[in-house]
Length: 333
Image 1: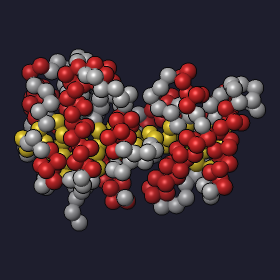
Image 2: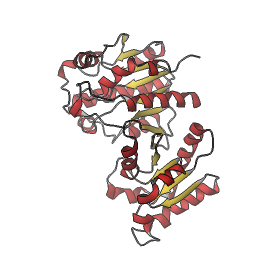
Image 3: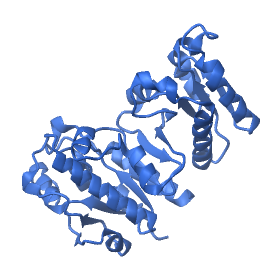
Image 4: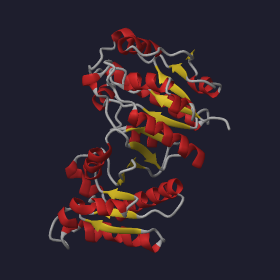
């Protein structure tokens, strides 16, 4: 069976992404499952290889047409995007130039995936401040991928062997969350989560929805009755469509061990509601997945780790898990 080509974006050049990519290119558990294709800058990778005593990339394609180049790749390869001059990169330093480069890697990988040149995209960590300084307005990968693939409905899902959470809202301020909630949006996230978990588990998943307010609103005593007005109607509509789901649950008890054992995935109202327990339980192994895209996209569940960039200390565990899941999803879709 032919191994799928998986595009891997290098992430911010000043962070740990280049080091992690170098490790992936020679990792047998990766190369035995897929053909890893790194969309990045070979000059940066060579500098990081020297700093971290890692093998430099062996197969390099210097091409102005990364989509065409990636289509013919059969071995671990770097597609040299020439997004930034390696000499100007300062490890651990936020810079608009590194932000612009990381954006170019993503654009190239998405184009390759949309044409079928790669079977999926795994994204390395970007730095939001650097991206914004480069004039890119997207708050994160999820929104960027949705726009570039013209996906009508998407959501972020973080998954691990310990816990899986999907999110109704993402990278927004906490005060903005209530106004972004609607039964329709919650139902979208429920359906997207049910679909992908059905694929991964091979059976109907058991889902749980978290409330927004303390104690899930305590029958309207806390908040503006978001549970009664938007969350409970969405849960009822999901049940009516045959989805196996409970809630809204109080978030302070939803993730207790006995509840996690009975739940395949949680629907969370906002970013930290699900990510605090998830990162506490599975920081090194969790994978970020964008649901609803016409292409497969997974990602590491950590940032650029500027404090340890180019020092040979970065763990590739989350990226390895992201590649494994991308390969699995590419076979499922």
